[in-house]
Amino acid sequence: MDLGAGKITFHNLRRNAARLELDELWGDELSEMMREGDLDGDDALDQMEFCILMFRLNPELMLDESHRAFQC
Image (cartoon, rainbow, N blue to C red):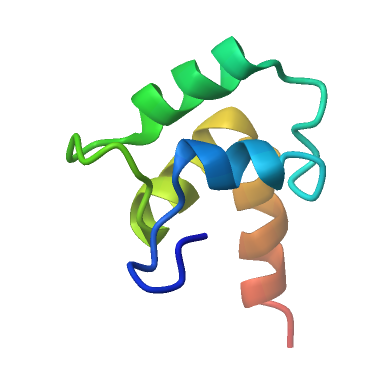
């Protein structure tokens, strides 16, 4: 993440792909993922764009998180 801007660039994503369990993706696939997630066209993902993209790529995340949110 570009800490100054608070956004994820392609280079950040490529460098941290393994931490996000995306290490099996190649550069072209990561580029496509960035294009898909970049809703405002600034060539970076802000927090909301990143969250939307992760939920779209892995819908189970939403189920897991919603169960946690409502656990007492």
